[in-house]
Structures are given as C-alpha cells and as structure tokens.
Image (cartoon, rainbow, N blue to C red; front, side, top):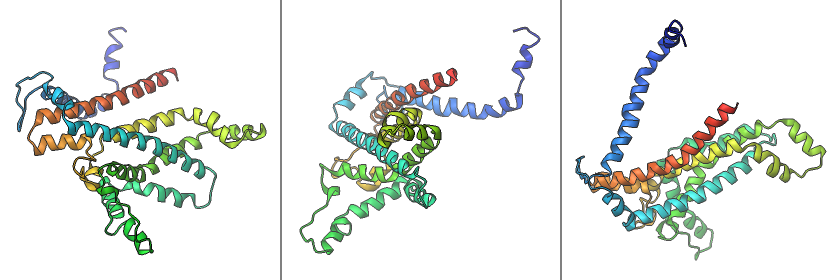
Length: 297
C-alpha cells in the first residue's frame, strides 16, 4: 500500500471509529481486564479482599477435593444433559408441528414463548408452588380422592435436581422452538415437494434431509443452551435454595457462597475460573466454525 493511499484508509469512517472507542475501552477494561484479574486472584490466598499472595494451584486442588464442589459439578452435569437433550428434542418437535401452517399459530407461539419472557426467579417460585406438597400437585391429586398419592421431589435429596430440570425445560423450550421454527421456515419449499413426489416418508425427510440442512441452527441452539446451563444460578436459588442440604447445589451458587458469605475470594474465583473455562470450551469451537463458514461464503 502506498503512502498516499494509507491515510485515506486510516481515516475512512473516522466518525464511526471514534464513536466506537468507548465501547472498545469498556470491553478491554471491564470485560477482558476484569476477567484476567479474576484468573490472577484465583491463584492467591485472597479472603475478604484481594491480596497478591500467590499460592499456586492450591485453590484448585482444594476445590476438586471439596465434596460440595463435586456435588455441584455432578448436578450441573445432570441438569445440563437433561436440559440440552430434552429442550432440543421437544423444541424441534414443537417447531415441526407449528410449521404445518396450523390455525392460531401466533397464539400458540406466544403461549410457548411466554415462559422465556419470565425471569428465572419467577420461574423458580412458580414451580416451587407447583411442586410443594402442601398446595401443589400432591395436594390437588389428594383432593381428587387419591389420599395415598405422594409427589414431593423438592424434599427428596435424590430427586431435587430434577425439579430444576423440569422448571428449566418449561422456561427455555419455547426459545428453542422459535429458533428451530425459524430454521424450518428457511428450508426451500421445493425440497418438501421433491420428497413428496419421491414418496419419502415425512419422518425420513426430517431425519435425513431437513435436520442435516439445519445444522447451523442446531449448533447455535446448543451453544446458547450450554452457556446458559453453566451459568444457572437464580433458578436454583428461587426453587430449592440448593437444598435439601446441598443436594441441588450448582457451581454458580458455590461461587456466590464462597465469595460473599464465606469471605473466601480465592476459592470462589477458582471455581468461577473453572466455569469460565467450561464456557470457553463450548464457545471457541463454535466461533471458529462460524468464522470459517463466513470466510468460505
């Protein structure tokens, strides 16, 4: 590039570049800077306030030998697997049904999407009322004459995490349905016509033609769900409070407990760094795939 053309390139769209400076500074300082500072402090013995007394990987060693953290990780795995699989499957089935040009489609979409408009706190409280034995499902069924019916998963250490799964599915499946429906509406109508002419069963059309064509939609959906799973906190606090005992504890709640209630910044930040690493493992491959796909286009 010659010296005469370089200034024109540098000062091209100068107003837009100047306007973007505050945003760039915010990203560099607040997001990237604070994230790096968090990682640094996770290698220290910080308690109530940050201190640069480095202890190496001691916080991480303590983290992975703490039963409470191990329970949190297992619960996150259970919640993640069930939420990811069932929300994707149910969301796609609902989207496929909605794609049949049914009557009152707008009303149905509103109904299915409405839970997603609620906060996780509201969702947790609603399902706490539904699942509470005193006046929830158990009470309603017993009032119908089934006196011996028992449904009390909130008070059961073994099944409490599944109450969170149920509430999470109710909250997020509508969003998955909307994403899948948008993907289905992008399928060329000629593909459907060709499959009907060839006599291909509808389920084979979806399984072997439509779903492979919707691969980018599925990947985006899985990434969105997965990052939300790792960060789940307020739903747990509102629904079970992490109980009974620590039976429904999740990593985000573990971080909060150690940072703000136990005044152990080092341990809490070590746990948050593990959560960050998990999110990066999910997001970076997706970002690379999107970048390469964009370059190929």
